[in-house]
Amino acid sequence: MNAPFFKYGYFGDDLSLVVAFIIGIGFGFFLERAGFGSAKKLTAQFYFTDMSVFKVMFSAIVTAMIGLYYLGVLGLLNLSLVYLTPTYLIPQIIGGLILGIGFVIGGYCPGTSCVAVSTGKIDALVFLIGVIGGIFVFGEVFPLLKVFYYSSNMGNLTLPQLFNIPYGLVVFLVVLMAIGGFMGAEYVEKKMKK
Image (cartoon, rainbow, N blue to C red; front, side, top):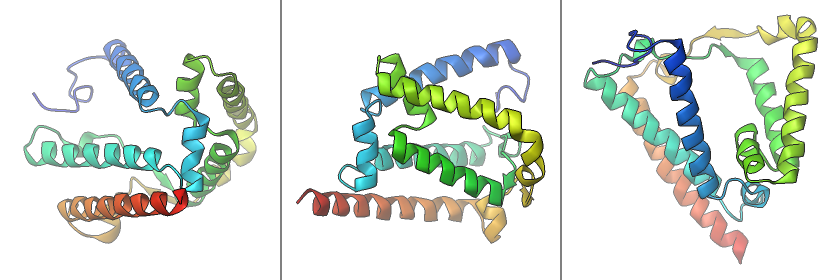
């Protein structure tokens, strides 16, 4: 049996929604268990006093990347069928900056705000209402932003394509970057806590 299961027709739309729901609940549970339902813990990374969010999320990304790579090497996963969001460089950079500013000001990202709301945090509820309001406003003004939204289209771009190097080398370099990032995070945390 090869993956991705949905693309190979092993299950349909209805089951895919059930699977997504279960994965989402599990992801939210582990976010809460890691303390990521707390705005104080989340914003501590911006003050470099607690880099747990950086370390946990980067660990998850690297683990998924290595897993996907080796599943592809073993022929269990067809990486060409894994959905990639098209790259619209300038709009996505600006969107990332807006998300980052909202994260710093509100103390949550959209996912962690849902986790915090589920545990009864009022500040997260206010943040989530703002997220939903922002989505609504964006939807209403989208016709005015459509040209910009689809500007600087680079297609389904990956790092191996961008740098014209083998996928395995990119995996290795990202793992090295993660190790350096973890060491740097530990160093910064110790310095800032003094």
